[in-house]
Every structure is written in structure tokens, then in C-alpha cells.
View 1 (tube, helix red, strand yellow):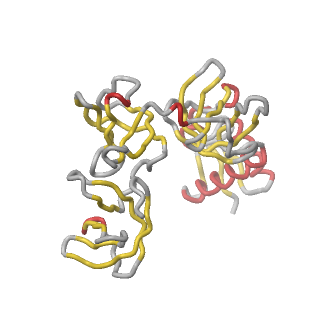
View 2 (cartoon, helix red, strand yellow):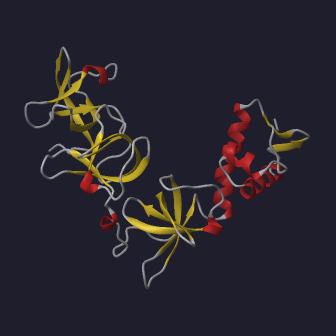
View 3 (cartoon, helix red, strand yellow):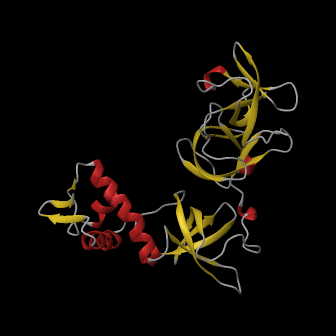
Length: 278
């Protein structure tokens, strides 16, 4: 059974002049010629995304959409009509959001958080801004210290509400934010605390704790040094903005990581920056 709007692993049944047909349990699902990877042959299995093309025919592609059915994504509006808006979601066919599924009046070239679903009447992939009811903390699938996927949902007085694994909501407090963030940003985070009486969740960006952060960022800095002939023009004197722009980490974590690498004699401080120790 095909899962529309998702990746399916299918076997190649036969070849044709305009592509190959994949085993869909029926007459075969077309994977057009332009999407066939080199060396694919009859009998091979391949992961493809399945959807309906512009003529409403089931079709497969090896293009990578920005989101699958059931996921939430921040997508750009390509066009607006009286019936709804069309969003770019990474495929040749744009994604439709009916006017009644919009919370705001969508405008071209703007980005909006939407959730993908299968329209029951047409069977096509569609999107909606009205997905609050699908986010719930009554039954949690996460626990404290779990690494999770986060999407910034909205700003509040205490921080930012984030969507956790497309299922739950949580909060990153202002004092836990070490870089500029905005609605629609996606990044990894960690469950910091779950309040048993309410199931409210506090999260942090990245991995929690000094040792985890330093270990991760040390590997990043060493690799960047290797990629740049053993030298980088940054130090603990660099501004927080410069450090974040280049290393994507806070100055506090950067300084801790440099100190650790220096103690391990993996780097040395020079006048113009940091140098990899041979």
C-alpha cells in the first residue's frame, strides 16, 4: 500500500522510454527518467517520495521535499489566488493551502508555518495553518534529557514556544537563548524539564550540560582548523557576533571549548587567532 506524501521503498518492475515503473501492488508507479539515479536496474529497490502530479496522477520522485505529511515546516508562498495559496515545498508541484485553512491572509514571498496532511476529498497533499489542535502534551512521547527536533512557534514574555518533534509544545526561556532566533527556525534541542502536574516542558537548544557542549564544539573547531590549514583568525577576544556567525555557538561555549582544547595541547593561542598544534 502506497503512502502518499511520504517516502516509500519500492522495487523496480520494468523499464520504459520515459522512466521506470515501480511496484505499487497494481499496474506500476512511474518514476520519470529525469529522477532515475545512475545504475538503477530492474529488481533494485529505491526510496522515493510519492504524490500526485499536475494532472492528478500518482507519481514518484527522488526529489527531496522540505516536509512530509504529518510534519510542520516553514514554507514560502509562491502565488495567491481567491481559492488559496501555493507554497514551495521542494518539488516541481507546489503545495496548496485553501483559504479556509489559513489563519492569516497569506502573501507572496512570505513564509508561514504549516502542517502537511492528505485532503480526504481529493487524496492530494495539502497544508494548513490551523494545526494547534494536533499539538498536545496530554500523552508525552519524550522524557527529560531526550534529544529532540524543535521548530520555533511564537514569542512570549518568558521566551519562545517551540514545537517538539511535530507533536508537543515546550518553552525555551530567554536566559537559555544564546543566539538570535525567529519563528520558523529549526534546530536540535534537549528536554530540560517536564512538570509532572501540567506536562509543561522546558527545553534548551543543542545538548544540555558543559561536557556535552564542549565535546561537540571541540570537534567542530578542530575540523575547521584542519580545513583552514591549521589557523583561524578568532580568539576569546572576538565579539559574540563574529563567533556566532562563523562557529554557530555562543561566546561562552566558545571560550570554554578553547580552554579545554588548550589544556589538551591540541591548539595554541597566537597573536592573530588560534593555531592547531601538530
